[in-house]
Length: 105
Image (cartoon, rainbow, N blue to C red; front, side, top):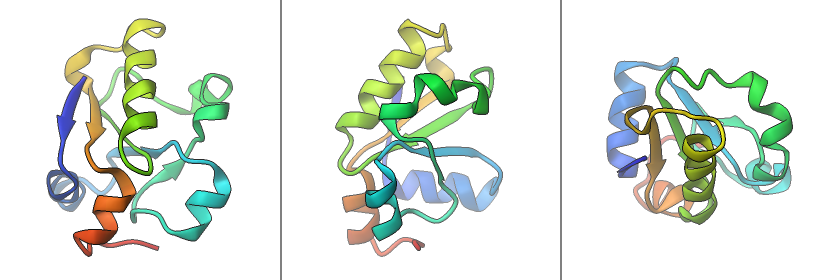
């Protein structure tokens, strides 16, 4: 797992809008505010919805502040065998995304 900042994530999305950017917060949290370009796959449903994610490609994971997304990244590496160079935890999460005034919905 690699850690990246919200600004780095925004740069990645600007260069590749189709990047796998997953928000692991619960649906009601996601509905309040979320980074533009994310897909909601809640941590509580993650194992059941793993088929929606290509673990062979780069995967960027965000949550509220970085804790849940870090646990999901660890799960991907340990239980699913995802390569650490393809798994990215977005530090500061949605809180930092909003504070940095990055595109959101």
